[in-house]
Amino acid sequence: MDLELLKNALIRLFHRGFEKEKIQKLFNFLVRETSPQHRLFYPNLLGVRLNFTHQETLRLVTYGVLDGLFEMTWQVFCPQCTAPNFETKSLKNLRLRERCAACGSDYEPHADQNVHVLLALHPRFYDEVINTTDEETPVAEAGVQPLTVLDLIGYPDFREHFTDQAPRLNQAIKIRNVSVMFTELIRSTEMYEVIGDVQAFLLVNEHFDILFDFILKKYGGVIKTIGDAVMAVFKEPGPAFEAAVDIKKRVDHFLNSKLKNFSSGIKIGLHVGPAVVVNLNENFDLFGATVNKAARLVSHAQLEAIAMSKEFMAQVHHLPETQNTDKITQNTVTLKGIKSEQLIYLYKVR
Image (cartoon, rainbow, N blue to C red):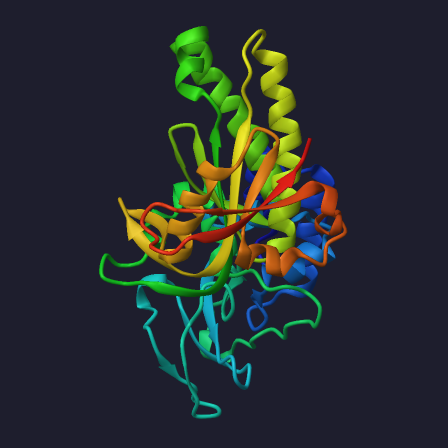
């Protein structure tokens, strides 16, 4: 192994903001536990071993691949027998249906379930020619959540640098179940008039920083911003609810401290269900009825309360916060584009 070349690559990661101690741990791992026959590893397991946060692991994948430290592969598993079926360098190569070579089952690749990220130390760090047919596939560990397509497409830096991984224009990658959050600022149009375009622009961007931080800390991802609104996704509804409560408290406090004599806040809507990953404007986006309903739901949120669909509430009703009946109210509302009336829940944050 060319240690000097490896050190130079890791120095680039250090300059990107990774802690020196964690860079040293990464160096030790790559030197001691990888070889031409054992280059492959799952980034989520590496993150656990090196004590990386979820956000740090996403950064490591993004910039490790971008800087040429790692090669990235998407590994597709059969959900029936859990056998790895095939690997591809591009999500564009995924098909709607696959047949498992191990058990013969027909199955669908899902962005939140059975399409995982696999990394390999780049061949340029080795003195010998790599024979990929001799490489051993690593073994997953029970209890450690894999890093999936859904994890990475919600990480802003990955979205920025890996637009070439977005699906083909005529391709959709299914998601079994995703919690979708939409936010928007209350009285934002008036705010621009009151404090001026420049100050409003700066304030909106500061509030984005707060949102992104809480979303990523709760293992969520940001799909896009639309004006002052944000669309975010989470694998599980529990962390989505926790992030929404944290965001509501923090952003409302932030806005009240910045906007004197002007009442504002953030509205948040939460829904859960299936969706598909698509290509919109040469980047990743989410599409489907779940996304549409979440987008409509946010308009029914209130200055003091988060709006949740009936489906979302059914999956978080066991949380201690949602069992506090003093904080929960029900409403029947009409959502634009949806024919039947919808039962929604309002969770009072303050």
